[in-house]
Length: 101
Image (cartoon, rainbow, N blue to C red):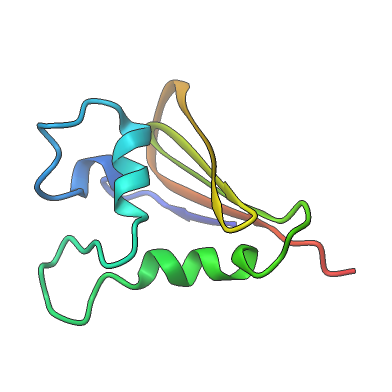
């Protein structure tokens, strides 16, 4: 589990903040490979790096991201679900559930 008490993913996704209203959609876009808020060449690989541990399994492993009012669940190498949280979450929470047995 990792908690970042910064601005949160929905506040920092460049170019779409005003076009897309739901925080879960902003998280989903931010998690697409090659997406970077810096605009620098060679950046934008973080999303695939944090998804990798749960991408290589087909069991109950998952990555949960909560940021702003958005919830994003990634498992079995794809987006499993997105949802709106009942209240806004300050920052970003990442939770990996990995079955190591």
